[in-house]
Amino acid sequence: MNTAMMSSRISCSCRPQTILCLAALLGLAVPVARPQAAPATAPAQSQLTLQVHVPLVLEDVVVLDGKNQPVHNLKADDFTITEDGKPVTLRNFEEHTAITAEQAAAAPRPPDLGVNVFTNTPTAPANSALNILLLDALNTPATDQVRVRQQMLQYLKTLPPGVRIAIFGLSHHLYLLQGFSSDPAVLKAALESKRSAVRSPALIPAQGDQASDNLSKIEYKTVTAGMAADMHAFEQEAQTYQATQRAQYTLEAFGQLARYLSGLPGRKNLIWFSGSFPLFIFPSISDVPADMMGISDPNKSMATFGDDVRRTTDLLARSQVAVYPVDARGLFGNSIDTAAQTGANTLLPINNNPKAKFGDTNLSLVANANSAFLQQTATEDFAMDKVAAETGGKAFYNTGGLKEAVESVVSIGSNYYSISYTPPQPGWDGKYRKIEVRLNQPGAHLAYRKGYYADDPDAVMPGKKMLPDSPMQIAMMRGGPDPSELLFKVRVTPGEATTDKLDEGGRPDPKRMKPPYFNYALDAVLDIHNVKMPLNADGSHQGSIEFVAIVYDAEGNLVNSATRVGHLTLPEERYAQLLERGLPFHQSIDVPQKGEYFLRFGVHDLASDRVGAVEIPIDALQSRQAMTGSAGQTADH
Image (tube, rainbow, N blue to C red):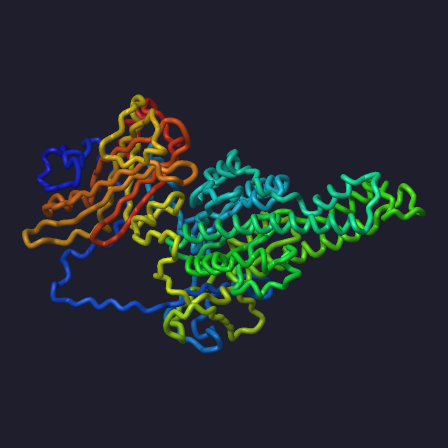
């Protein structure tokens, strides 16, 4: 079919002659089950739309029986919810369930699209929840980080179809290792990459190692009561500083992650692998016993975190994030016992005791170390349980089964009930409001968020960037799930050679766009069944579609972008043809040759606000020569 002979009238905000691509591209028409088309006629102008903004509280409730299995088929009448002791009336109730084996078996297999051709067409039923693996290098010794990656690689071998997972890392900042994917091979590559093994500058030693090191450094020396007190005070100050620093980094990371997830619909299960848990997400820092803080002066050290803790609590609540802390150390004991038993510290005369002999163990230091170990372990367990309980998750510790912990989280976190209600107390007074959910069935265990701050969600926080809230901005987030309200295929063709000249249509970041560049041509075909194109009085269909390409670096920074808007006026015959074949579109964008980059391509129907997007690692693209060799095969799809 010769596109030059079409009678369609198409206008574009820039270079309209390129909005139609070569006739050969029509071989990429999107094969999909035909959904209902948009209404053919526009609503009458006399209709009045009244928008009323009513605050709603959304609560996700996981219900497990005595065997830790999800309880299904509950009704709204089975639940009773109170806020600050006052009963509430439910506005919406919905059950979400994990993908069944039958659904997975019936899911379509990924099509062979050819070289450098990608699509956002779903190949498996969408999971009811998003799952995030957070690999915490900030608070986890290196040996335990290795164990986590090994067990996660084992888990991916049995990953259920349709389970969407993203992988983040945490050192002195949060970084994205892999966006949401249900492809085990893609997730495996992220876990095996060098970027997944990061040593943090604030990394703590393994639990007990610090005390063991202190003992080993004072071999053959006497230890007086005054020296022991000074050493203890010094260690307490050092631990307080380190705990404060790590808590600050961790809080910032959780805030960033919550903001990132806030635009994505549905529940998110955040699986936090760590060797230490300095973060306390509580309604008030006073809820934490002083001896549980693990630092010498918790009020002094943590007081500056009050606003951050509150803001993070709000963000996690609004983003529907349930935190599942998993102790990356698995089963472990106190290494100080081993050090004493193996004789590493058995040559210490005890506190200048003249009767002490070499070979006697300094029992005072060992006892203090054991006491510190037990207190720190209790603190860690308390923190994990508290974080999980406050956000509707569950803590996993003192277990070697990290793989089994993730299996449990994905299973229980994908089966839940979404409940919304109008708060009984109107207005935003900034106070913490406690939520209690009860079930009229005995023996069931409920996990849900225990409360929220009544802060105005639309208020601008000083010094904080507001989240993008448009569907297209959310769709184009680096690493986000590929939205599929609009379906398309896109072929990405690399340029023949590098160039130092940038394409005029791009908006590069001058600090990150450094020559030489490769220019990539994007030839897309859009299924327009879900594009809103009402019928005009002259019998034509009219609509506007935005096409956006964004280049991100490995850290998630925007490097380059290109946006074009096509305004279409289609006669009925041409509209019918495009319903069958899809609408072709061409765009191009430059990418630096050196470095690791990701290309995200999206489509936005301006009339309906429907979106579609797909993310493509530049390293996954094959050469132009490889595309030439498979051109005949690709054209058949």
